[in-house]
Length: 200
Image (cartoon, rainbow, N blue to C red; front, side, top):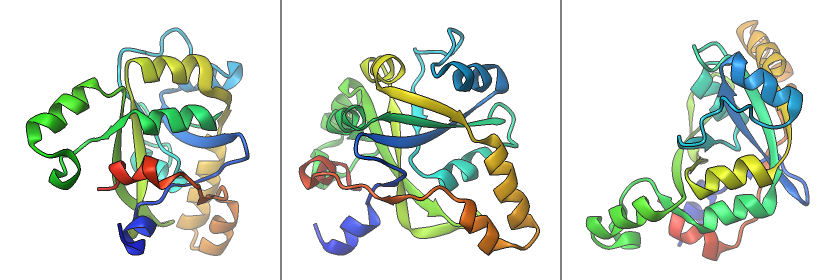
């Protein structure tokens, strides 16, 4: 794996020695109680795959700065680093790469069995335009969803006001002020043996 590819497919996130912050957006009936209680409410559907995103700006791209229907409440969810690592170790790429998976049938079998899946999408700038490097999206299903909801979450913060403030500064033509409010996302060191099978 060359250095350029490793840089292109690198996890960047807000993180501490024991946690990593990921983002999700929900309708207020889900997001509000989750932020207030630090846990998802009973109406949150565990049987669905849930996608977590370490990139704030990619979440803004996905939810339109919290303006898209059903994604009006943006959550910053601090989770246990060991849980995040468990998900990566048990994940499968969401698309077939012959050099990694062999034939398509083998990849499909692995994808069905894996409790987590990874896809890499272009990172975004303040204007939500694509950048050359990629941002990790981590899909959780089955056992991974249960672990996420019941074991990994350390805290949940409603960052919808922050999203609105940054968006307002961008629209007002004040990108430097907007950039100053962004969460600090640094490269997140992960053993290459974990990431190598997940780089597209």
